[in-house]
Length: 83
Image (tube, rainbow, N blue to C red; front, side, top):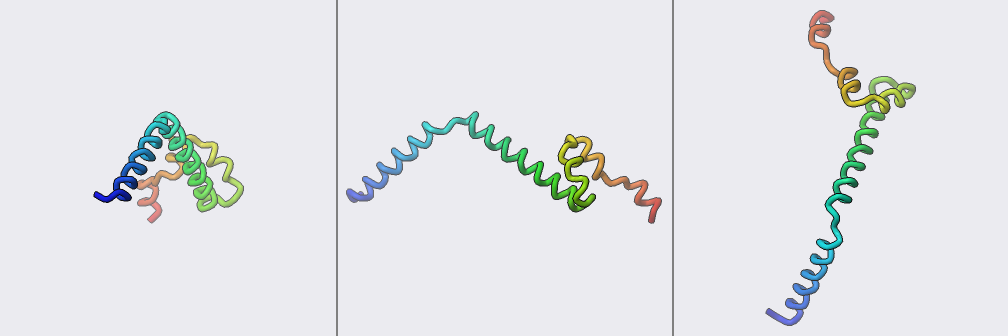
């Protein structure tokens, strides 16, 4: 193993060790949850625009998950009766 390859390996090892020490699992999980919340709000806003037009955006973003599922759930019995 050449000098520069050994030096490169040493630098990589030290850099990875510094990253490992800096990582805080609780902070990483909190950030992941925050990102998911933002994605859910954006998805609800797109759903509001697609289904109800611009005026209902606030209504959908304020709904909890159960209310939202009831709104978009398919009623198969009603669909069969209409066709």
